[in-house]
Image (cartoon, rainbow, N blue to C red; front, side, top):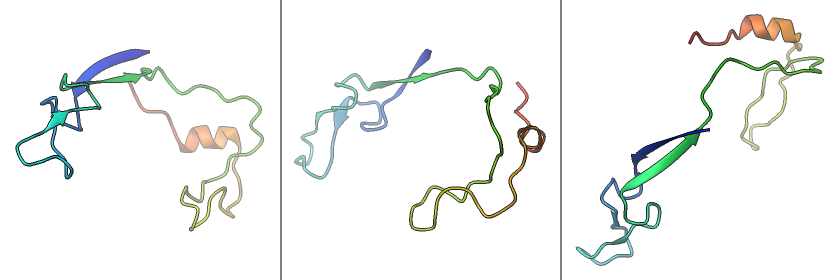
Length: 92
Protein backbone atom coordinates (compact mmCIF):
# COMPACT_ATOMS: atom_id res chain seq x y z
CA UNK A 1 0.00 0.00 0.00
CA UNK A 2 1.32 3.44 -0.91
CA UNK A 3 0.70 6.67 0.98
CA UNK A 4 0.83 10.26 -0.26
CA UNK A 5 0.55 13.49 1.67
CA UNK A 6 -2.24 15.89 0.71
CA UNK A 7 -3.54 19.19 1.97
CA UNK A 8 -6.12 18.72 4.72
CA UNK A 9 -9.56 19.34 3.28
CA UNK A 10 -11.08 20.27 6.65
CA UNK A 11 -8.80 23.24 7.35
CA UNK A 12 -7.46 24.01 3.88
CA UNK A 13 -3.89 23.28 4.98
CA UNK A 14 -3.79 25.86 7.79
CA UNK A 15 -4.00 23.42 10.70
CA UNK A 16 -6.75 25.63 12.14
CA UNK A 17 -10.45 24.96 11.78
CA UNK A 18 -13.02 27.76 11.73
CA UNK A 19 -16.60 26.49 11.65
CA UNK A 20 -20.03 27.69 12.72
CA UNK A 21 -19.48 26.97 16.42
CA UNK A 22 -16.17 28.82 16.78
CA UNK A 23 -16.13 32.51 17.65
CA UNK A 24 -15.02 34.90 14.90
CA UNK A 25 -11.22 35.03 14.62
CA UNK A 26 -10.86 32.21 17.21
CA UNK A 27 -10.29 28.97 15.32
CA UNK A 28 -9.55 25.63 16.95
CA UNK A 29 -6.81 23.13 16.15
CA UNK A 30 -8.07 20.98 13.30
CA UNK A 31 -9.15 17.54 14.49
CA UNK A 32 -8.69 15.99 11.05
CA UNK A 33 -4.97 16.74 10.78
CA UNK A 34 -4.07 17.55 14.42
CA UNK A 35 -2.88 20.98 13.36
CA UNK A 36 -0.38 19.85 10.73
CA UNK A 37 -2.39 21.04 7.74
CA UNK A 38 -1.50 17.72 6.13
CA UNK A 39 -3.54 14.62 5.48
CA UNK A 40 -2.42 11.22 4.20
CA UNK A 41 -4.18 9.10 1.62
CA UNK A 42 -3.38 5.42 1.38
CA UNK A 43 -4.03 3.56 -1.84
CA UNK A 44 -3.20 0.40 -3.71
CA UNK A 45 -1.71 1.20 -7.16
CA UNK A 46 -3.67 -0.23 -10.09
CA UNK A 47 -1.73 -2.99 -11.81
CA UNK A 48 -4.50 -4.39 -13.99
CA UNK A 49 -7.91 -5.91 -13.51
CA UNK A 50 -7.87 -9.12 -11.49
CA UNK A 51 -9.71 -12.24 -12.57
CA UNK A 52 -12.79 -13.13 -10.51
CA UNK A 53 -13.26 -16.88 -10.38
CA UNK A 54 -16.56 -18.72 -10.17
CA UNK A 55 -18.66 -16.11 -12.03
CA UNK A 56 -21.74 -17.67 -13.62
CA UNK A 57 -23.39 -14.52 -14.97
CA UNK A 58 -22.76 -10.76 -14.93
CA UNK A 59 -25.65 -8.28 -14.59
CA UNK A 60 -25.82 -4.53 -15.00
CA UNK A 61 -26.44 -2.78 -11.70
CA UNK A 62 -29.70 -0.98 -11.05
CA UNK A 63 -27.84 1.48 -8.85
CA UNK A 64 -26.98 2.02 -5.23
CA UNK A 65 -29.79 4.23 -3.96
CA UNK A 66 -32.29 2.20 -1.96
CA UNK A 67 -35.35 4.29 -2.93
CA UNK A 68 -34.82 3.78 -6.67
CA UNK A 69 -33.82 0.16 -6.34
CA UNK A 70 -30.64 -1.84 -6.01
CA UNK A 71 -29.35 -5.12 -7.39
CA UNK A 72 -29.41 -6.26 -11.00
CA UNK A 73 -31.55 -4.74 -13.74
CA UNK A 74 -34.09 -6.86 -15.55
CA UNK A 75 -31.81 -7.08 -18.60
CA UNK A 76 -30.43 -10.38 -19.82
CA UNK A 77 -27.16 -11.21 -18.02
CA UNK A 78 -23.88 -11.58 -19.90
CA UNK A 79 -21.07 -14.06 -19.58
CA UNK A 80 -17.80 -13.16 -17.89
CA UNK A 81 -16.07 -13.17 -21.28
CA UNK A 82 -18.70 -10.77 -22.66
CA UNK A 83 -18.16 -8.51 -19.64
CA UNK A 84 -14.38 -8.46 -20.22
CA UNK A 85 -14.96 -7.51 -23.87
CA UNK A 86 -17.64 -4.89 -23.08
CA UNK A 87 -15.64 -3.28 -20.25
CA UNK A 88 -11.98 -3.38 -21.28
CA UNK A 89 -9.49 -2.42 -18.62
CA UNK A 90 -7.80 0.99 -19.02
CA UNK A 91 -4.45 1.33 -20.70
CA UNK A 92 -1.55 1.96 -18.32
